[in-house]
Length: 425
Ligand SMILES: [Zn+2]
Ligand SMILES: [Zn+2]
Image (cartoon, rainbow, N blue to C red; front, side, top):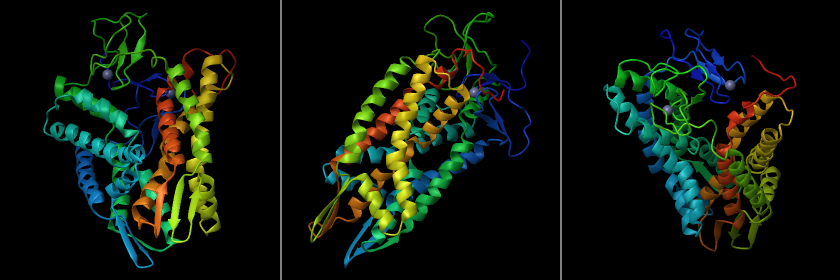
């Protein structure tokens, strides 16, 4: 086999193998010829830029954790909260599971992602591969889907509007820092491109880019099946039942093991919990005169009637539509894969991309409750507490995210469908 100019890449969604376009015009993207997913762009990834962004993100993250996000003045009673304070408020209300979930998504996962990037980038910038490189890359891949700084930021905006109806509320320096951190992390996710980092790893360790169709044996036979490593994207020839990726040692599978049954079990559990999450009390507001109990829907109605129809729509979409959409879409995809329903596979693939994209936004309401509980905490005079629905809702968010990650999108493309179908090939 002749030495390639560019290593082959496999599409993340359907595993079709492509030769990347060496010189793409600026601002253009190469797309998979089968499912239309983005393969790579014209952007030249720079280790220096990624490192600078990661260092800036680390400093900004520490500032966001330290400085207050907002300041409330409720008839002379004052309160401020920073990011960790919002999670601690839930913990004080004996809602440890919710405190853990919101803390995990807004604090632990983003911090771990930034720390892992620095752990990888700093030594690589100095020409070394850090110990445990593959394990850290694998961990980061998992953590990135749980890091929700942008959803938390939207939660801050919704909380500011909600609190503006009951007292005087001001955004503090922490809110601006959080918005800047969100932008930095977006830039960092573009700059820190996993395939490119693996190529740099190969150059540092072996002095060259690894050839495609890597194999633990010397010569690949033409009839040997090709497998794509889920961690590093290396295209490998399979040898027997249990073989590991020669680059990162991840076990290679033709598909995620028990993908359909695991996804179905998680979906059924989330469907069961969707009803208490919508019917029970999500938030309990105590004032000197009465106690008001709000479900998700009554919270939306409150926003709508108090002059914030735009935010009412956002909360309704994030808290009611998104979880249900995820459950229905994943259910439909499971049925398509299991019973070979004749829905064009490109549309199934787009549906799955949508489910993956909207997944994390349903955490919005939980962040809002955490922030309101931390700020409105004046004992019997005025306080906000999370209700039982918040726990059920948190479980729905986690279960639907796990269901989406259990579903193997390659199953959509596994066998040919006999009827004609849409494809942009
Ligand atoms: Zn594809
Ligand atoms: Zn690998």
